[in-house]
Image 1 (cartoon, rainbow, N blue to C red):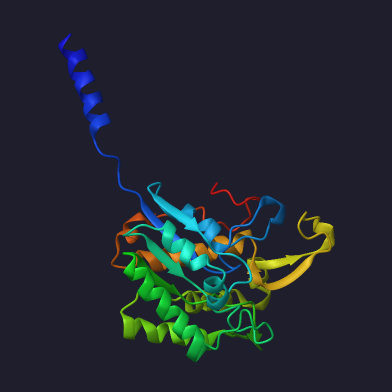
Image 2 (cartoon, rainbow, N blue to C red):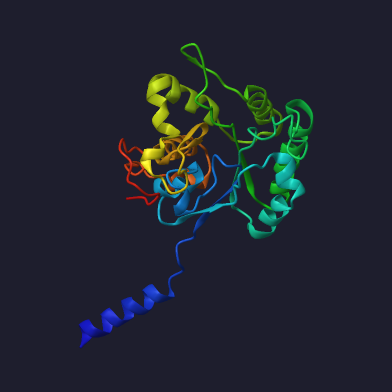
Length: 263
């Protein structure tokens, strides 16, 4: 009888105990981080795979969407929507640059040293004004080589971000540098597996004619980029660092799983 009472008391205590606080991480970005539907496989964004490198009590809220720059993300109200959805203490990863450089698309174009910088400053200060923790993320490299050396096609934008780290004390995840190291190590041919390179005979539903795309990621590419993000997050002096798994086999696969599931 006494054992049953103790067990019941323990059960009630567990029910009364507060649930472990969740850590939420928002992503404001473009197609390189976006989550894609299954019919677009193997196209995958790094934000889609990042949850596989975090503990169960970390929640990724991915608001990245293709074709957006700092300019269009703000103009379309997506930034304001994110601010309204997020709560004090949430982390916001901010990664733009690919589309800001689109000089032929005025709705996207934001010169690095002026409008892009101003937009990032707005995001930083407004995030902090809402009690959020902004973290800048430099844009990942494309499979772009000058001979045998990988090129950073958005270097001017990354330099603006790095400068803002000093002037605003904002944490930075240097995905450009980390992804450049990875792509350089793999080389022009080895890096193909990270990006969207398919033939018509591969019969990928989203790419019936095949595709040669050195910007967007394959499943393996997105997993690899998410692992780099996780590595960088681990170094931050923020609570989110504690949520990064020490071992991340779901992000370090060498063969595709065939889906965007963790395992």
